[in-house]
Image (spheres, rainbow, N blue to C red):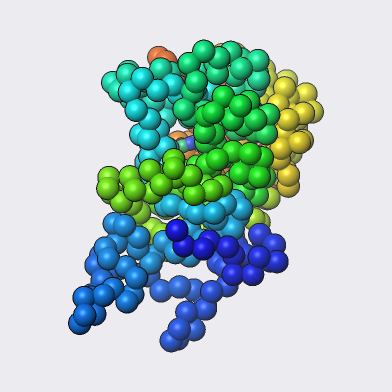
Length: 387
Ligand code: PLP
């Protein structure tokens, strides 16, 4: 495993991001790295690989800088990029063997929940669910057959429950399980799960890490070179769920502005959550930054620099009223996904289908970096017209 320490560990994350680690490549001393497109690497006359690479499916130089930056941001030992967040998560789940026990939260990104349920049934896994924000429920899920892996998603899409990573990891480790955290929504700006005891952190890099809705990518970072990590590293090469070099380059470019983007989105999300909480047309607001939110106490311990750019609210008048509000918004674009510079709205339950745990009057907002006043004015006019 290559050394993944930042080039100068004394630098703060904002500096590491802005400079993309600040590596200046010979011979031209480019301020941004070149895009390494090669799929294969030429041997020396004596058959050696003095460039250190064999084939791009195993380890492309295109990944070196974004993976090293991710390691630095998450304070991990090694990182791997994948072709999507889903591919990254599946690489963790696919380390399980028939009969092993997998513990997952009740609220998690619906696409992964759907996949995990099908995969568990097909492979013959013992799949046990726990209530995201209830450690007693997790303790019950861990009891009995020793678990191999505990999955955490915090804040959890789309109602933003938090799981106390430190407490949950201690519990899971006491039962001999690995802990993996989907930290897509928190980003390393708000939470660093490996420092709280998790073994692996996962990101849909499609979202905040890239931040511009122009690529699909995933990432894993590990706290140590565990047997689980070795399995995952090998599986990326063997299954081939790799990212293209241009996407890896775009991802590094996106990460250079991670800190200002996420901080602006979080500050706006806080203001918008407070505005919505006081609006007569709104039934409820889900946002960990609101002191009234059940997740607030854990959020204050576990998140820094704000509480994230994602929030949801329930519209008075039910599903039809929620649909009308979504249709009246003009600056918020109605589209799936999250974590980009432009604000998005989604009427979530119809997208998730019959198995959804999401109320049918819920609108999910991904707050971008537009002027906060414009976003609030857009919500004001949409709610007024839909009353
Ligand atoms: N995890 C979370 C929290 C997500 O919101 C998503 C996608 O929406 C994923 C994982 C899956 O990521 P991707 O779409 O990059 O496969």
